[in-house]
Image (tube, rainbow over all chains, first blue to last red; front, side, top):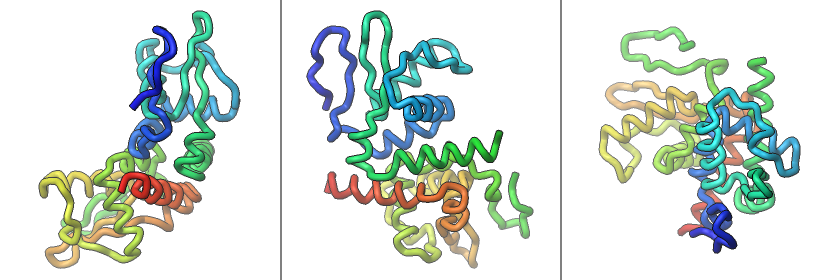
Length: 115
Length: 115
């Protein structure tokens, strides 16, 4: 169940009804992906993939962003040559109230435990 | 980092410091495991593995309980021939305040969405 693609470069996203809790939890269960989401949520604005300095290869980075997009955690749009990313906070908060904030707080707590 | 085993039948559990957010989210990202945790949390008491009628084989059931135990989500103890299970709520709530409740509420919301 994906939204109608508007042009050949539009990326497939689940609509809100297609976002599954298990998929969201799986997407957030990887440290690199969780780190991406923390950064995006803290920033609150669209960020290009290239803005992330991740300790993994470019293709692995692309994979992680795709998992986040396909699970419904982030929205990705092309702007020129850049792929911009944004957390789907409004939709996630509507579907699963408090979940994203609890995960982000837990990630913060864990980062504090393991500096 | 596991607690000292008290006898040959004691099962290995991470101590609180060994519980990782990623491991907890991964453990909860499977529908069967999430269902087990919902049932245990709703009951609030120890439940035997055999009390769960799961749509998977016995060996898969054992695997799911092991993932939950090794990630720190549940505690498993032998009592006679039964293996009893309990959510490690106090420790999880101390480590990641609100997380378990948010996941359980989200699971409830999702079950309501897909009856």
